[in-house]
Length: 352
Image 1 (cartoon, rainbow, N blue to C red):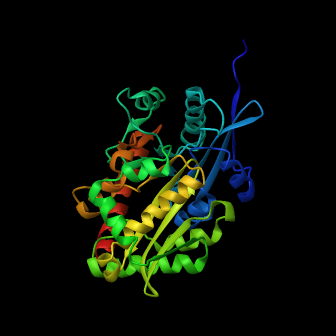
Image 2 (image 1 turned 135 degrees about the vertical axis):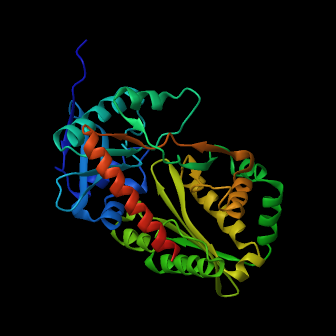
């Protein structure tokens, strides 16, 4: 039997084509959209790779290329990719294996870049993905892996409600009696309302924001209608009480941000709105809800809210972490040093 022939095509595709292809993959995410890359990193710094097996597209990857000034060295960064789980198809690890080979050859060998990949892969006791990346010459970085709670939406709505933690369910029942109105959609107006509740909460609690949530406003404007983020707003007595934003791309919905006003906290508005999000995802046929990352040490309040929301319907997972590859030891040392300076500067400016 003839061996399958894999090939990579780089930067030969436009934005509209990219979006059409992205929606054929169940592991697609907001972070692999053209809009996210353009707003977060600048469109001129993006590179788009398509992997084919014969004439069939089997994987894709949007990378960010950042080079040091005056030096012909830089980093190729791939976040939440490569995307390789085709919808309604049996997924073969060979696809990922060949895709990593081709991406490494293109960006490490041909371009001489330091390649960093943050895969969208769940860790498990078999360590399958760790072994696969290591077999291709990638090394695990010291960055902490993504930790989150995933809610399985395969159960009926009634079963999902029963699976909520008892205290969480009681607060949901209480909020349902308050006359709260929940509005959802994708409009810019709703997005501004969600950001307003977030910024009010941020100002009140004075926590350090990890993400620049205002970037999401510009990303939303540039996304096609089929991939726009979904906004959910809780209104009480004619006033904004809660807002949250989910990215519903691929097989799941990802919680990106949420904010509660001081008055909203008193009526448990977040419980009702988040339940309405779960109902919406279930109705639209999504398979899971990703509660957007957890940290029990730095943010115990949000952690317990999400943990009780997941209840018996969810599970805590870790992704496999960040992997790196580079053909030059000197380039690797220089770029890691520059990256540490960049991260330190960003931490200080956010703290200020």
